[in-house]
Image (cartoon, rainbow, N blue to C red; front, side, top):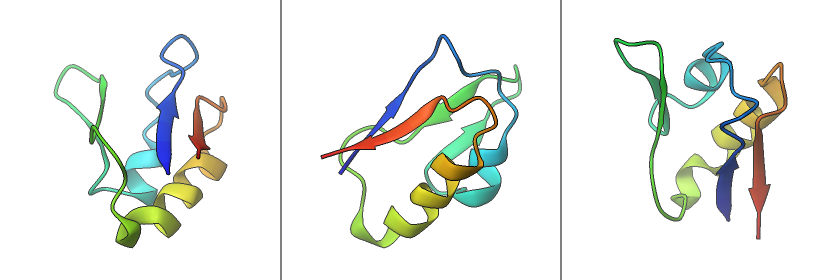
Length: 63
């Protein structure tokens, strides 16, 4: 599975960080940072939750 972030939609609400803190983080400037590369299988459930929790639908899973 590959995580895709629509950076034009992302507003930095941080709901993804709450759902999957090992994949997402909000830096000191308020910008979203995302773990690059293929998702570890152990993170799939939390990333799926992050996708559902995003209030602006800036996240999706492909593959």
